[in-house]
Amino acid sequence: ILNVEQSPQSLHVQEGDSTNFTCSFPSSNFYALHWYRWETAKSPEALFVMTLNGDEKKKGRISATLNTKEGYSYLYIKGSQPEDSATYLCAFQGYGGSQGNLIFGKGTKLSVKP
Amino acid sequence: GAGVSQSPRYKVTKRGQDVALRCDPISGHVSLYWYRQALGQGPEFLTYFNYEAQQDKSGLPNDRFSAERPEGSISTLTIQRTEQRDSAMYRCASSSTGAGEGYTFGSGTRLTVV
Image (cartoon, rainbow over all chains, first blue to last red; front, side, top):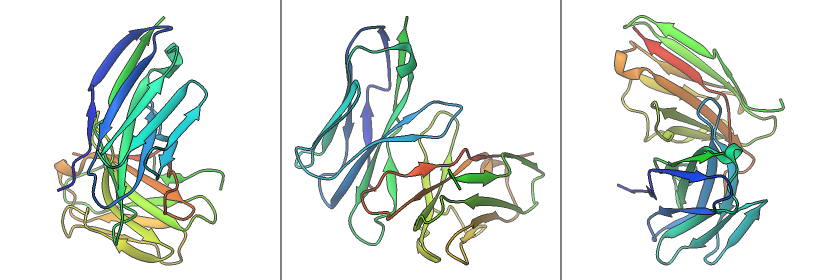
């Protein structure tokens, strides 16, 4: 059974704080690591897809890094804003016959207070 | 279409009835995925298609669940003899190649079995 773990489960920060969360995934058979932003009443929205060890991706104030050898990825948010409040999901994509099967973590729920 | 469209948005059915959930992916997207999402949880994989071929159905909970995509576009997820434990949000997603690409999720169908 492949496990994707995210920590912390939830996070409460003040507007302007910078924050980061962790996604741990299997280090074998790795193909890609996805990050999604999910507001409860909406659909998960793709943030990043990373495939190479050492990859760093950035979108505005949000960035992510990837370490495939040790099986972790960090998501960083610089200067959090209330509109960043959402659940951030990571998902592992492996090689082989089930390449379309994204295995999602349970998410980190971020609340940003004004 | 512009996004992934799912219908119906809400479905309430009596235990023992069959239901069919429809997904219309983004035009031209090769890969189509079905996920189930319990309240407050990340999506859980059910099955996926490349074109009309079902590549992986390992996530379907039992043989009451089936899916098809006969012409490589619209897909239907069918649940026969529904049970209360089938109640969940059923989300469809599509991607252009399925290989390291972010997925676009639909708004989902909220199924309630009473």
